[in-house]
Image (cartoon, rainbow, N blue to C red):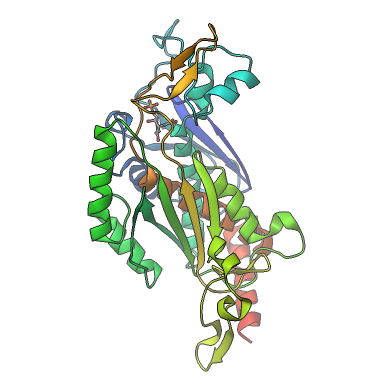
Length: 377
Ligand code: EPS
């Protein structure tokens, strides 16, 4: 698949083109809209989310709600569109970069004094497009009973203590959570910490965990580095703005363990087949799915924009100044979970198509069923 996203934070539209997606997949637009709504939610989001009402318009690649195999174009209108719409927009020039944002490096790269020309595209608003593509991929994966979900592991120093037993538990418990959390006690404490951060004009980050359940063994490859499933998912997760770390399974903790105490021993049971007793590998061995749940964690740094700004430098005068202040979220970890699900779904779909074919859902299903039959034998 090839994916192109386009659009500025305050431009007319955020858009995505998804090319290489198979023909014959029924796509529910409401599902995409529900995902967009999930992306907008979460305690601690900023004023922009009160303005927007993200809804997708699919303008190519489909006939009667079924994909044609041609590029799928999806548009989401920005209600807070302020550039392009008039002869001269009313957004004043911004010349003092915010530490931790794309402002400084972007301004140097494009030889630009007005940081607005950088931040319009570097804004996390672009993730709207990724969620649209992810929602299409999720619907494809569901045809093979592959489910994707996420939950918030931590916000700041508050850690959720609960470990989900299966993906259904994640889906039901996060459904009514204000922070995509499965641990109510932790969630209360997270909310209180977010309120404190907001009062002190600060921001927070956190950890999200993504699960992919139902993936058959053998998706991905050990043959070449860029077809490894762990590498592809990690790459896509790392590409989400503000992500500074990614782990698969036991991740960094794995490095501290002895092999004998941490590798996932293999067993066989009548009716259950061959399975791993534990899942420290996070469902991936040798760059391929091993039949267990795929588990990834992503670490999000605190939101870059601070209402009590850090030191910076005016790009025009060269003088020391406080960084500029823009409207922003206090925390966006819950939204990050939804975006992480989308990116993981895209990565898995790509390697799934590599294995089972790309043209039509019917053909892919036949190939899949043949493989399942062989594997079961
Ligand atoms: C976001 C939209 C943005 C920011 C936020 C995420 O809208 P605005 O800049 O108009 O408030 O709220 O992006 C950032 C914090 C950032 O630094 O990029 C969204 O739709 O998710």
